[in-house]
Image (cartoon, rainbow, N blue to C red; front, top):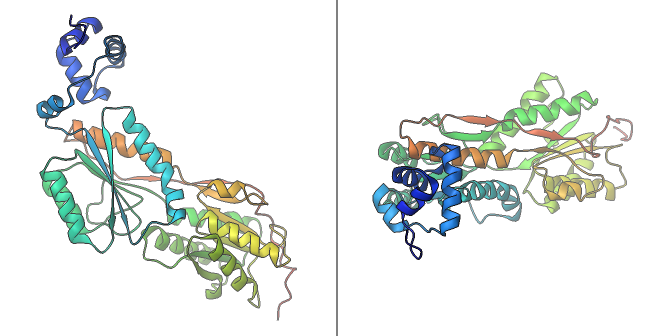
Length: 353
């Protein structure tokens, strides 16, 4: 056994497995039986074995690199990073358990030629083994056609495409909003406002559709004045609160598209002399750090971002190891986190004309 430069044979001998099993482990640890995997990992630690990465790549035809391609309309704002960071962290952590590396690239919506050219170079130049596309906007069909033509492993995150109708991992935004209205309606609220961002992002369209669907279901009055456009910031939440409170009949509950806007909403309502939730209930989305920093603590919807990231990597690695593997659509449900910003409706605080 070589003490200075241990080889695959050295590792195999100490672990009591075949050299081929060591190679399989280095290319795809999850494909090796847990018992053998544990013995191999112990042998690697004892021998301080470092694989020849370049030789591995040449032998396997793989790069051991996964690309996370983030498609955004403009410069990514603080609130978007706050939302996406748990997902990115989960992807990174899951890959850290393997011998795969994570490469991150940010592209712009509207620059389809650049995105398509970049991805062609990555695939045809064998720079990456798979790609996770994270986008709130429609993913260009030409990009999906490229993946299908090259039979290239990919997943779409927080996105759904009717073009392929598979490999989409997302949240049920429409039903999430229906559930928020259901919850508020059960507390006696009928005048429910909806504050989100004016955009053609998929999840915003679905949330608005869920809001209209639920309001219609309960036969509440559809008041267009109750629909307000923010921009995911605390300040826009304050502005929308001022607009809603200035209405002849203000709402008794407000659904906000993220926690930042909900925090601004609460601050402005309280600053105008009203109480939350005794006078007006407020709900947010994300269960971010700000939801527990505001008083009262915010009732909000939590998205299982960690599970989404982990599943995306597991499905990609399965597809890379077995090209016949079909990545199906997965739709996660969101969880309501009940805190102190919501309560029973109080319609008597406003003087109606």
